[in-house]
Amino acid sequence: MHKQSFAAIISELPKTLILGSLPGDISLEVNQYYGHPRNRFWKMMFEIFETEFSEDYEIRKQLILQNKFALWDVAHSADRKGSMDVDMKNVLPNQIDELLNEYPTIDKIIFNGKKSEQLFWKYFDEKTSIEYISLPSTSPANAQFSYERLLKIWKNAII
Image 1 (cartoon, rainbow, N blue to C red):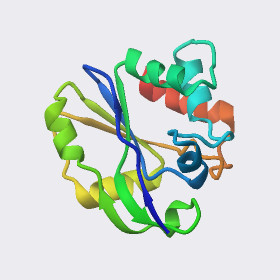
Image 2 (cartoon, rainbow, N blue to C red):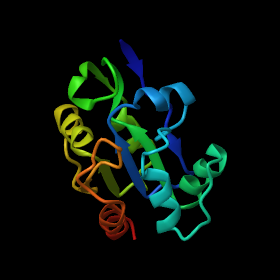
Image 3 (spheres, one colour):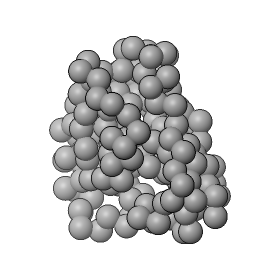
Image 4 (cartoon, rainbow, N blue to C red):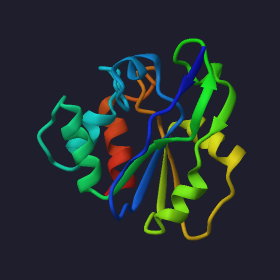
C-alpha cells in the first residue's frame, strides 16, 4: 500500500526540527501527526512545555508553533503494509534540504526513533551548523520504554 506523509508543521522562526519516519495507518486515517491514541508524543510535549494537555489537533499544532519547532517526516511517501517502519519500501524522501535552506534558524534535528534517523542519513548529508539527536520512538510499538523514561530522555533533549 502506497502511503504519503503530511505537510510540515513549521513555525515562523523554527529552532528545532522533529523528524518521524512516515505516519502510521491510524495517523493517516485521522490526518494528524502522531494520531494514534497510544502514541506518547503529544502527551510528552504538553508536559515538557508545562501546558495543559489537549486532544484538539489545532491546539497541538499551536504548541509546536509557539515553541519554535517544526514537525515533519523523513519519508514523503513509501510502500508499506500496516504501520511498522521495518516494512517500508520504495521510500521517496521529503525535501528536507530545501526546508533547512528556507529556515536557516533550525539548529537542531531530533529523530523520533531509529528509522527516521536511518532514513535521514541514507538521503541527506550532515550540516555542521546543526546538532543531530536520535531519541527513542514515541510509538506504542516501542514498549521497552516506559512513559516516565521516555519523557525524561525527550525533555533533556528539548529543554
